[in-house]
Image (cartoon, rainbow over all chains, first blue to last red; front, side, top):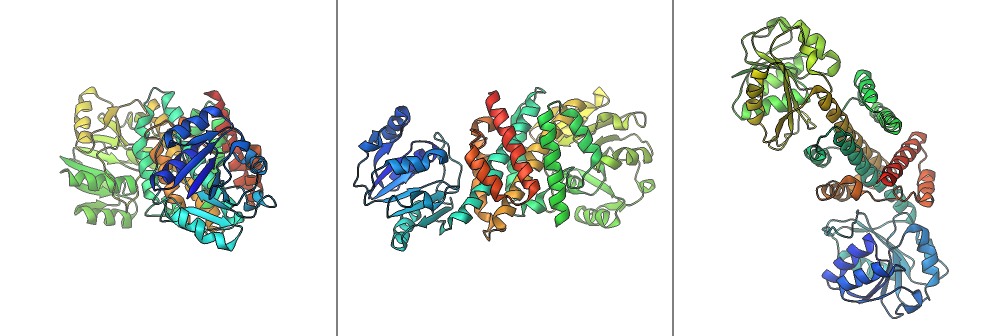
Length: 255
Length: 255
């Protein structure tokens, strides 16, 4: 099966390398950034293009891994062909392909990817959607070659999943970043926070995050909260602290 | 060495059980809640008390593991003796003991504890402080029997560390809770988020959280942000989303 990637960013890099590893034939990488296209194509040992007009037209699968903002316009700039076209974006609906091509779908891996960091695909949940029923099995077989956790989801559900992913990944990571910043300012190595961060994550494998919630905000301990606010010189950190503490308290009293 | 615990909550439970495991003799548990005192004492096979007047006065070490709000008043209700008194609170200064007793200190384990969940103590960072220089080695030996990661820190630095811990543990966990809530509302099992959460945490062992930051907020992708806000019916979730997204953007442009 011949595969073309449109995009050479974090998702395209990790997904193409993994697909090649499990036996797919990656034929071509497209990116409007020559450096990115060439770098990924070199790792894969395939050809690359920086103009959509140079894309091969006889691949079986075209994977669009692009920023949301340009996804639709790039799709519509590619000449329609007989392959299955899919995108990998959590927050973009299936309908971005509508009216341009017959066979299309979504192949959404729920994971955070960095170009430089290999990740185990086996347990990554993949969420699929196809325009034609007859392509459902075809796409499912592709995803199942990568992961043991594959299911179908509507665009609407997927957009919620992506929103949830922003909370548990991007926002949680930002909390790690702010915590690291606070200790660094006082000459403490942020690595001391790692065992705590690891345990915070490990905990929610055996209890729900609601049950695992600890700290001054759950009981709205105003003494500690006031002391913490007085330690935060930065006004935007104060607002973050207050907003999240109030939310923790609100969610805990809901139970 | 005889040890008495004043408190029978999450920290007292895990710390006393671990101290007993590595060979310390836990003599007595005090808690004003009879059920908590009896439960922990039973696990340890030691005596318990619900009145401070029943505390034994010849222990070598008294560990106060209490809520911040009651710590000082409980300390001051206990008759002074010759033992070393320490508390385990990140945000409380050494000076809560001042004027009441001669030998005192702090034994702060930077970790999140739950009564029911055993945790590996070996790599928990312990931060110490003592009133008397001659007690520093005594307390360091105690902590070193529990963990390979022991150091001294002033009350001021410790309070910053505790503040950082609130961000990376309590606040990050709340992001896990909100993400789980969002997917549950759409009939999706929140367990699908676990591989993403695990990778988010694993990532920052090999790069800084600043470098690991991904998602719509870093590039302030207004299309995605607006779409996400429109999906959030709950006003307080909208505020959380906006506040943290702005903070991510602000921190990333600082680099």
